[in-house]
Image (cartoon, rainbow, N blue to C red; front, side, top):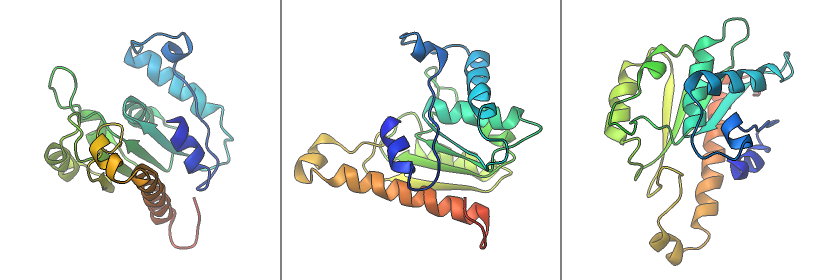
Length: 183
């Protein structure tokens, strides 16, 4: 996510944070309430006048969706999920948080992502009540990385993919902001 933080700086101000388990050097994530509370604290520390879009990688995107659903006073403009983990470790589809969303969402998914099969995401997206869009990274895995065999053929391919992702996010933000406003 640190690389995307740097890349997204061309779109607007970016604030990154780590969850408590990351700060403590643990590998296992905290339980959902702790993760949401940490995300909420980071959100509330932002300028209250500035428009905010929550962007998270994997679990960070999922927790951003949970936070967006819980916020009542001040809502983010949208959520961007980079590699959304739709299918949990037990095989269950984690779609309830997405179906409850009331703000636009952009999914950026790798075509080789076993945690988010595109056909299953399409089923969920069709049932969502909010505007949602999908940008597929052809050949990308859950981390939106291309296969090593592909990178051997073109070592700069990943940079091109990452730049295209940032362009799509920028376009999405312009779409949700409207024709006369920026993100």
